[in-house]
Length: 154
Image (cartoon, rainbow, N blue to C red; front, top):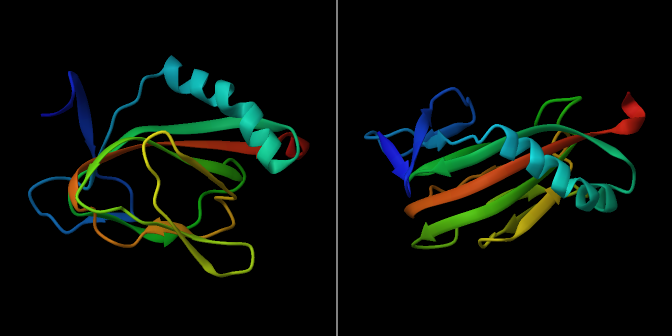
């Protein structure tokens, strides 16, 4: 069993983009809080609408996802139509070096970010490739991933 603080987390083995250099444990574990996850989507909705510039509908939350040492994420895009607008929120981390978030910008160029606890990055996750190409060095990285779709699509 793996714990984050006093909470038990479940190993995540079904993400085809997520791999690890370590063979002793899964690349990540997922810790979901049911109603809390839904409330986070609703609470952060105004920020996402302001960033995107039009009304949105909450779609899905992944998190807390606990990335383990050696984890890396191949570049990918998320699913249409539910993950049009996405954000990555760094909840907590204990790293030996920054864990780079790579994202394609609208000009097709790679942008590299290092998110600290409490920082969030917005992106069009269904259209812009994103990932974490360098293995995680440190103890862990905890993130939440929020997804929305345009209201105009309904």
